[in-house]
Length: 588
Ligand code: SF4
Image (cartoon, rainbow, N blue to C red; front, side, top):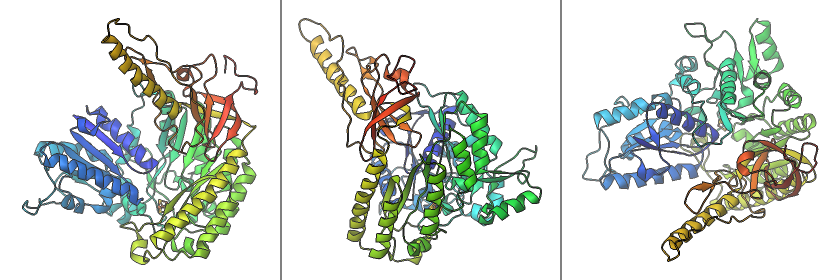
């Protein structure tokens, strides 16, 4: 059976999808990038942003139409929307055949199997004439945590069968893939309860994985060729594992519920240690991976919580050259009053104090964050405070969102959405413009420096041009084949592009198409001189020309020194140089 799996939302969802893909693949399912070619369609959904949610509903609607036209498909909704809406979603969207929450993904093959075995594939959206199917949570099509992990967090961790999914991930390089980057989860769930966020309810209580499992996963990824590992968790710096507190029947360590906030104070940690408890902090975990898996050339982590970000983490970052100087630390607002309504648990002053510590200990650190504008009751003064915060911190970028009330959150019940849409739009645009100025200055400050860039491949513009030329060539070939001289073109000329100053912060290298096509339709390497793209350790997007004597294929996945010669608001432009800044040589 062919499966089409589409992912909405965050890195956590991307990793979940990767693990689901590996799990289903090991059971004999194959995957297709075309939903029209699939018998099973899975949407891994996100309920944090309205836009992602609307997109998912629109996809569900399209599949409903296909089913109404008689196509036999299995449609599954995974992730946070499934968990939040529960079986109500099956009632409202009868074309959905199965639901699987983010904490139950290991059960997905069973759900698909149940739908197939019982032939309960739904056919169409409900009409007034069609009786509603009876839906229960126990009919084999639904795997949701409900609120059990919040009701009893310890029980939730003990029942955490998801660990097997992480541990069972595929470590063989994917066929045809040059992917050298991978995510590794260190915590699941969240205990922070920001009022605008549904994650603590959909992903459950914060559960921390045993450090040995994490280090082993990194080692196996490195063995399979991965160069860059990103540790992920909702609040990674709150990782803390107490050894001996959670073990299985054979004495092996298992995931455990994270400790309360008190553990992150110096006295809290000292108390744990003086009680004879052996603990692994986030700083110690980072250090272990850095020392025990030197094949990982880049170690990053997202997302950090501004509170309780200890100097111990900054010290380890400063001491370990392969840990990237990159911190994604969402501030969310520059107004203490709004931060309080958001239940963020820190003040603007504390946020700025953290930024000062981070930039003092790591002068080359790159900072990024998230901001919400138009939170309920936000006044012009509150917004101005946010503008001041953005102006005063050297953020390389900020993801700026207009507040929208999300079902299942505290804020939707507690605060009326009273900032008019037009005002939200104006504030959003104004803040984007301010951030653009700040980003431009940050990127400009790198001009003249040599940075290490992990090469991702040809820039999207170069790859698109290669493909366009290839398509052109294929038409030419068929035209030539149909002509009297029967002489096919022998080589496709590929354009070499200049830097696109307008490239977006995330689109440039997200899916570089890696090859051109020869006149006979076979793939051919892009030539030297093609524009390449990669990222610095601080996650700055960098464009440069493929140096003479090298091919894009030979450079993909390598780390190159690049002398920065120009910049724009969201990118750097440079030239490949030798290790000491000399002209790029063949040993580059
Ligand atoms: S820290 Fe706040 S915003 Fe982040 S996942 Fe937890 S509750 Fe949501």
